[in-house]
Amino acid sequence: MSNYSLLKLALLVLGHAFYHVTVTPPNAPPKGSEKARYGKDALSRKIVMNAVVPIELGLIIPTLCQAATTLALLPSSDLIYSSSATQRFGSLPRSFLAGVVLQLLAGIIRISCYRALGRLFTFELSIRTEHKLVTGGPYSIVRHPSYVGTFCAQAGMLLCTFGPGGWLYEAGWLSSGLVRTAAVMLGAWVVYLLTGMVRRTSSEDRMLKREFGKEWEMWAKRVPYKMIPGIF
Image 1 (cartoon, rainbow, N blue to C red):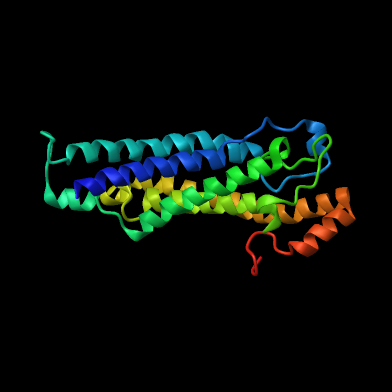
Image 2 (image 1 turned 180 degrees about the vertical axis):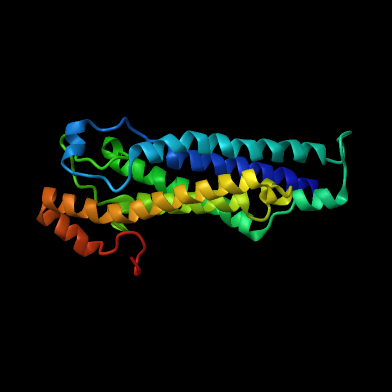
């Protein structure tokens, strides 16, 4: 079971690394003139970006606790050894594994989007200088693949942090009022982020259609779905 503990810790760290990729802008923010052509954004940069650092720092705490627990429960450790604790903290529930997979998938999707768009990719809505309509790579599957990556990242993060297998869950900290409050605040932020992104898809489509005309219409005909093929 100790082998599972080490594997679990490695997967947790790997998942967080890919989560970091999804929430880190690959380019500097666009100029005011480049953002002005979009009008009002459905998402506030202050609300979104100012919360990212506290969230990532908050994720480090249970990860460090998981690391300490893993080392303490190793058979070779002189600290603590309990078969029941080893079984609990060393388990790999399906929901935890699903969370890790979602974060890895999110990172892969976002990296492919960053590479496809290059300097054109910004977290803010903008039409950059010498902007081009990119229709290859992940953008040949759906029109807004980067948002799919964000959905996967947030779902995976919540599963690994608060679901079965997560340190907070297994240690019983979810009964703490402070942790519950933090979980509710994080959940509210995630809902705001994801609903704002869904609303953004329409704003982006309108602006790109206005900017590129028939080129966008041909692309939209080839790629009719915004985020999920056959559904949305």
